[in-house]
Length: 237
Image 1 (tube, rainbow, N blue to C red):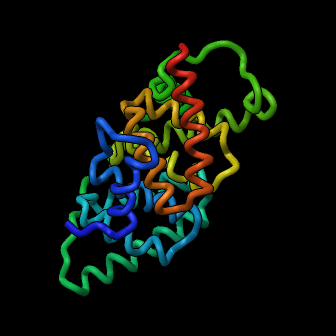
Image 2: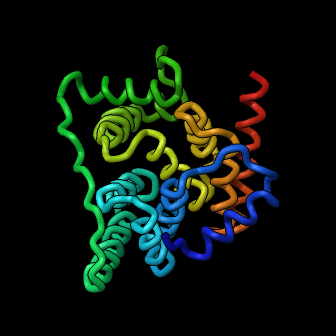
């Protein structure tokens, strides 16, 4: 299995960045991070080799497509579509070389019952680990329609698709948010969700180390500060 230099370097520097790790991300999880990051930032020439890496690491074609589709909710259709177009080029290159990549499973049919809003609410409650009740606050009270869009589209239409697990979708999400920057409140929320869906603090520290190597020191420093805050708040509860 051939993994690109950035990911190999990431594995060696993370211990220096955070100390020893008791549990690591899987090879497939590590491959998800730079694919999401470079798609989100529009660095398509850097995206190409990590798409090769993802396929070599065992991600299926449909899993990578789903990752790139998922992230449009966080960085927009233009970035997502350019990522898909780049992935098409990579697949054509591999096919020309006689490489046969696994297509993988399609998304299962989704029931229309209960309503999209209720399904999205249930998924979000599972992600955050607590029931949602009481009046809307903050941006949801200020612009109620966006709260409806989030529940019905993001957390129902998208999260109901079983090509990726909730944990994998959250890994895509924090990769995007860490890479684009300036969205610390959202990153804080999703790092907390990552803990709820099974990632360990050590794995999230490893994630920040990958961001440092693949995206940059500035972005990794900002992500580390948010992660440290999340872990400190968790420990104090």
